[in-house]
Image (tube, rainbow over all chains, first blue to last red; front, side):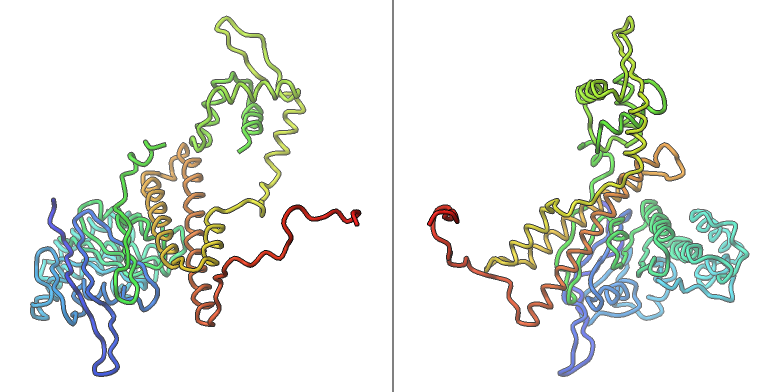
Length: 239
Length: 199
């Protein structure tokens, strides 16, 4: 049994204080292993983005514990968490979050350079990630010179460049047409199949269906989840 | 799917024997229907009887080749260009079940919607797992992708409809409307209604 790369236990997040408190998350636990993609679905305000922010160390819960790749998430200093984010966690956002003044190559290599890797090594790693996404020919282009689908593929390449094995994606296809969206989700799925662990937050069932498990979040609680999917060969042989 | 018309459509490409027709049909529709060879021969007999195909004499292997006639060609062309009618009368099991459930006191419709949503999501995951193995750049897989996509779109539509039903019922509840009804006392007399002519 492989060790989960993402582990969250009894996460509760309360916003506000006194009489005006809102329970964004209530005692939520999630565990995601390498090679596994878990989708979280729920209406707006159900707590899905809060949960992703906590899993990525961008926010701290009111109570609960968490580990990313075996490293404690909430008891560390901000600097240690920032290092964990650079080295282990990759984020993919709906609006790509690429830096417009940097080329595609520089955008992808940046997290590694910030981590002290020499530029030449960082670029070599970035090229590997971009090649995996099939966009190695775009290295010298700037974000505004490429299409939305290409930008999102750059963002995915950046999310797993170097040793990072945890991918957290928040509505990554929200700004894309359905065909491009499917290509992006397919690319994300391939990366997960290559040994990463991922959480995908989406309102779109068609995207969520690429995950191994789908969790339904309502009012800050996981109300139900689908069973882990069977392999395609098994499904087809049942005919 | 109309097997009769599918066979005619394939025969417009050239003469075939029965087993060959089955193979062609399955590969072209990605085996979305399991068709047995008996069905193929029974259909070919009816097509021959109706003058839409002509059968050759059996060769030394006992095989009979079928060729399409002019009227068969016309029938195939008509079928291919005619739209498939959406039948409003066709009963949707899930819609009927939910429609009945909302009228029954004591039935937890929310729980029904949740369990159906999970089952549909699971179906969507299974279809997507199969689709993940496909490559649309491979022309041999296009028919297969078309069939899986059709099922994916249908399940997705069902999930959207379930969300819609949930919203509709929430709004009704917020307005204090109840859809639950007990059995109404039967005002009609027992037995068949009297004929108008009988006084």
